[in-house]
Image: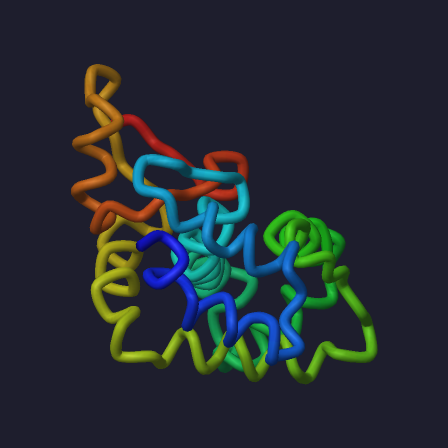
Length: 160
């Protein structure tokens, strides 16, 4: 019975040009309760981008700049290069200066995405910070940001 159960899947994988290691990593990454650095990075990417862009738009030196210019200014910094390399580490992608226009487009698309409305509103309200009480449990912080993981080294956390 075991062979019959998986026969279609195995047949498909053998006929397709899939990399077995990648398929296995994909399957293992989907294990419930398993949170790898890749899944954290992937789920926190949009949250981090929205927070940083909010912080930068609220910065007095960027007061009169359009959003696109704020993004361009950020992606030209070492800060963005480090952020990108950290977030894309498991995908084996690194920052490429020749792709700056692509990065701006991706970030603008993310910013204007309807799915990011709650994040934009949250970070606008908190001025780009994740607000926590010194006694707040991590689960409570997660609820406020819709249960998304985040890299605390990238976001500003402020106690209330």
